[in-house]
Length: 225
Image (cartoon, rainbow, N blue to C red; front, side, top):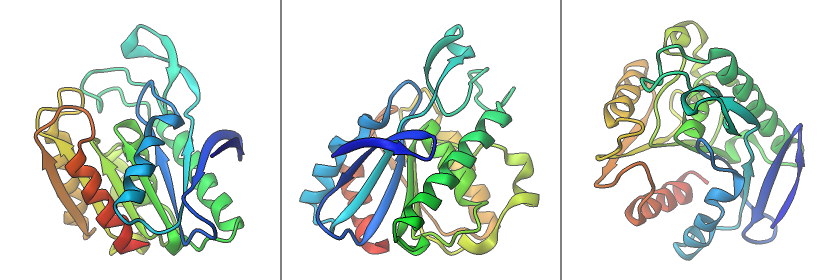
């Protein structure tokens, strides 16, 4: 495991073996950092995941309005508990550009777009949705955990159909009081209406990740990578 600059953002990089056959770029949630999901790698290995490169970027530190302007790691500002009211579209798009740059970095290292999965939790998942449905790269898959779809109003005009049949795994906690499950359901319904191939799973948990979900993620990654 190593930490090194990747484009203009620092990342934690974990490779589960030599010559990884796939790459997962995994974005953390609000107030966390790239180390947040590193422990999940060992669990995925134990579930039979082949040699894979994981890239866990650290979000920049910015003032977050909903937390009284307290500076923390965030992919964009949150101004309202509704999440989609007073949306920080500029911040979302800046993080979208960052994720696109991280994809380009992995391609430059030798991975084909079809060997790259974008994954994210909460805020990170929102950026995965934002990028995955707009990017020109044909990706291996998208994983959106406990999240919602940002910038809905521009989806029709900005959507790129290159990933219309790319597998998407969406999961949510039934007792989530941070990002309500209805938000996750709405995102899935909207993307399915557009033709995206979305798998939807719910679990009896709050705003978190559970063991059953990790098993589902492992099966998904083994299939698409």
